[in-house]
Length: 105
Image 1: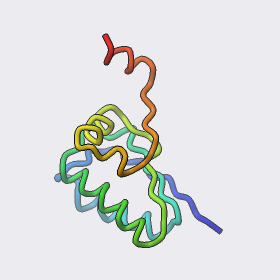
Image 2: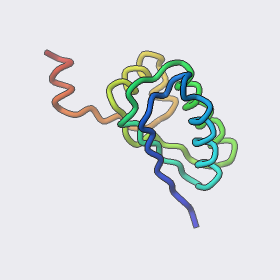
Image 3: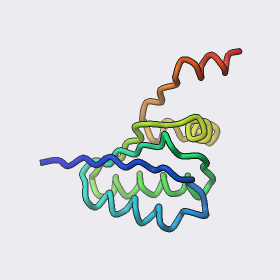
């Protein structure tokens, strides 16, 4: 039976939080076949945070598991887009209508 775990990351994905977040991500991957990352509450992301996401994606693939980002916020979406990594993760990025209007206006 396939196990799915959803993990809400509600802090910064930055160098200051990298070590505990790395441990949290790797432990969650060990416990499940599919890890769903909810990044809707992430307030900031830097290159260390991107490296954590890349590490988690790589480790999931290595273990024949699935890692999916199921919720993004504007900070995460903009960073993934800027670094041209959105397609690497392959998860749909839903942009709320009110946010889309602000970007056009």
